[in-house]
Amino acid sequence: MSHLRFDPSASPAISAIVRSAVIVATLAFFAGAMMNAALGQRDIAVVLALAAPLGVSAWGFVRAGHNEAALGLLCCVLVTVITLILVLNPLGVHDMAVTAYAGVVCFSAMLFSRRAFVALAGLTLFAATAAFLYDLGGYSRSVVAAYSSWPQYLDFLLIVVAFGFLGRTVAEKLYGSLGEAHVAAGSDVVTGLVNRAGFIIAAAQRLRAAQDCGECGTLVLADLDGFRRMNIVSGLEAADGVLQEGADRLSKECSGDLVARIGDDEYAVLRMGMHESHAAEFARVVHKALTFEVRGVSVRNAAGYARFPRDGNTIESLVMTAESGVASAQDRESDRVAGPADRI
Image 1 (cartoon, rainbow, N blue to C red):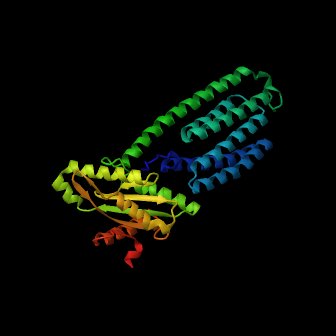
Image 2: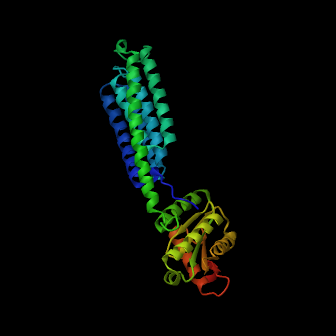
């Protein structure tokens, strides 16, 4: 059985934040380049002007849906620009370092995955340390280098670590609660499988990934026979037991696949990375798994299947095609598995 996984970087809210960050940072690079050129700080203006196209390139990652890659590129550009400006700035490495570096660390702490945050924080500390050493060694353009000292660096570390820790704590708690809510909203209470809403979202993600790498797949829908009558005759508890038994059987038989209960008496199984020539065979495996005896009740089903991308490129089109296969299989007395070809 495949459970839902909450990916914060793929959420619409994060996408909107990333788009705004890329736009604001790129405009800031342009504005900073123009302002410093007007003030005679041409070296800093050149640095900002060179950073602007990299900010624009991050927009390409955003449009492709790779939010974390866009943020990673943007933050790396910011860290590099901040370091170069501090070295070139006549004011040296002082409060500006604390504000700029701490801002990048805090921003990444709240939006990055844990691994990406650790990598970005390490890069930021390395760049900041290099800037401080450069300044303390008298190699920067600072006119106040004589006032620089190691306690300032220790203050910087303390503030940045505090910003990073608080930002990451907030992110972990927030994303954890959002993840629990996401999974709860996409799970079926009776069987523990993914429900219809969660299935549509998770299946769409798998299909998009399959399109990128040219994989095929198969969707199988199976509808239990006479489930409503079973509900009335045997009772709700017994009917729930049938659903749970069916879910357990499918989970064992289709381990690694996306298994869901998408209706009162209907299951769905999506398997990716399988050639379309094996679709009918896989549908029979699902059909057999849902043919069993439990609590004195004989459970039978009708199954239909659809092949990706042959029968549809979206999960909605695949579900419609597989549903028609289920309807065709329900009209049969035997061999109650049908696919798209059976409708011709």
